[in-house]
Length: 306
Image (cartoon, rainbow, N blue to C red; front, side, top):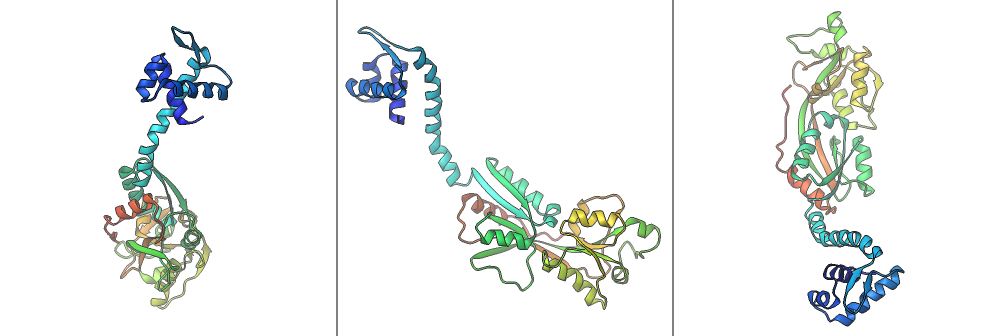
């Protein structure tokens, strides 16, 4: 069966007269009758009871009619659905992100995009920068929120846009401050207190830029980072700090991750700046991605206060 036959059936069912139904369809009666007969043969049951004076739906035809109307309504809606997909007002956006973005730029971007395009499904995946770029290179996902590697060259055909630049602050066990183990000056942690404390940090293979930014802070001040634990999740790092295992240098936006037993302190002097941005394939013409990138263009680069 085809859509044309279904429309013929509905027209006859509503008119209960082959002649009037044919006139409404802009055709003659014989081909309409042949179309209905072919449909009945395909279905294996009559749709109408016919006499010389009347036409009536069979019980089977009456039960099938609402399903046919629903199917035709769906077909009629396909053009509008296609238009929504073509414009990026419907469809799917696959967005990956580093864990630090969950406390800075990610909530705002997702909230703004949902407000602009409520019919688009947003699929979120948390992953380190290297994993995101590898996935995008393989054609998986549309856009990633990453920490760019300094002086690293993106794969051919990739594009990058800076989103956020924020200072690092110290996340420290609150008990160390209470016990006097850490010296705090005017609400800030001096370099010597940082250098002398055991460090919890992302492993370098997973986040080379972040790792180098943190260890570079030590080297620039004549010290060496004493790494006691690596962790790839910010939540894990903060949990280890709460347990008194060490301190961490984290983005200022991580203050939004409140945890009992953890204190966030600005660094005394000039603090390292962590950059976060988005990366995508230049040849990806997915409409939802194009709308996301257009929205991002209206987002100013943020620089949270220390």
